[in-house]
Length: 245
Image (tube, rainbow, N blue to C red; front, side, top):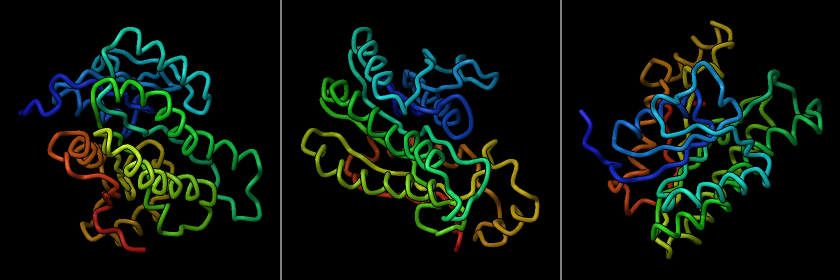
């Protein structure tokens, strides 16, 4: 049963058409928030259009497109209370450092790291308009665990941890908290192609002996976006079931 913890709040969730982003949208809506979803896959069969006021096709890697989308929001909404920087991609392969191409590096960082910057910069005036708010950045255990073959993804997700700490200090005086969630191995479509033996190995190294679910992460995101976390900022919260490297 919902407690209405986000009643009256307006949230923007990037990458909200599927996976953890979709679970976050559904959780926020259940708690009373109005949610705007920005996603390249706005026409996906898995899109949460039935659980959000709107879903818009926005490429977070494109600074001009993000600025235009934010300006349009500013014209029709009183502001934004919550920004969830969740949009992210990974490579279809796992190249060693010597094999990462310049294009692979650029694309992963453009979406996962620069995308968060573009969205935060463009929506900051709308957060200020509401007198404060919440920003939650999605990092990853790969930012800290050193998994081979993850050069670009790990760099981008580690960069988000640094941005979280900097923005927390910069935006705190404006009443804006900035935190990060650090998911472990979550059972989503992005990870579904992993070999069965690899998944079994991850479970064996996880204290809770299971893979995480998208809703496991969404619940933590809800906490950080709510008034329950009013005095929490600059934190990186692991949601990994006790996964050890």
